[in-house]
Length: 441
Ligand SMILES: Nc1ncnc2c1ncn2[C@@H]1O[C@H](COP(=O)(O)OP(=O)(O)OP(=O)(O)O)[C@@H](O)[C@H]1O
Image (tube, rainbow, N blue to C red; front, side, top):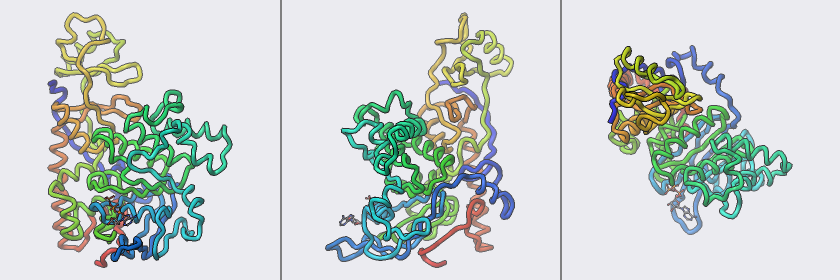
């Protein structure tokens, strides 16, 4: 296996995706928040309870929480704790037994369920697509129900397919069974977003796909959300997924009791109790790799050349920069092949030579995704691409090792501070912790 680029530099800039240094209180935080488009609305649950008929104990018992507009809030907890029931009460697929749910200031129980549901996108595991309907019909269903004109629906279908990375011409007339699991999930998200609802409920939407596709779909969701700013409630039982996606995480115990409701950084640094700590598991330092994205660390660079460039140019660059490996890019700067000097011997063109690129990570990927890609490829570095697949640089194992080391030092300092000053939020750079309806501190 090629060792590609070696050497490293580590320069994490901020936890959890916001570019630039963590703003000090009162300095940059407002700018970051303002810069983000928010089209979502606030959801408030007050003392919401669900008791299924014939069951002695409630499935959800007096849950109160505020889900801020434009944020991704992840419900995470063990199987059967009531995540799905809590989520489905928001769009009244399940009627609460008691309590109040307010969406954008309106009492959800006062809105007709059908009408309510049209304003709330819903995406579930296995995508929930109708098998006998084409992709276009599936995506256009809710806009059709709310009375959009045919032309507008057709345009919207194409726009949505494009948004989730599916070429409309290729996919709109296909049927769900003709798509892979990952593609079906993308269509599921496109359908949930089609009528432009301010709220999106996602119930383990990526649970049924393989881990690599899952990582890509998560990246895609984060990219979409950075453009759309919806209020998203996301259910998972995978804590790593919660850390990656959540602006806030609600860790739920039995009967949806809120054990902790806070930013991922704060929960990782200061689990509220042993149950939450147990749920995070023993790999806390590795989990912290999900707080940083590839774009947050300094990338390595190796010599590159376009397919149309003369091989000599790359040969010279490898020699001058004393590198064994370089990258060949296509006309749109997308990586095509790894090449070493041996590949360049006697060739007159860079087309069709070299080793396959192998695993690629995007600038949106978390450092944990990058680690997995490096381990899967068994190589010391992997190619990083930007939003349109263009080459951005390389990330290597040394960078990741240094980052884990740095995070460990940083978070152990926070622990000491927390003991001294009772400031329990290592994630305070983004948003103040909010515990509503959880255990009072
Ligand atoms: N329709 C129903 N009738 C009776 N009990 C139900 C019904 N749906 C769910 N329950 C029970 O309510 C509790 C909460 O279920 P729920 O599906 O909300 O949990 P969950 O955390 O989403 O679980 P999972 O992660 O396994 O999907 C469970 O004990 C479940 O058995």
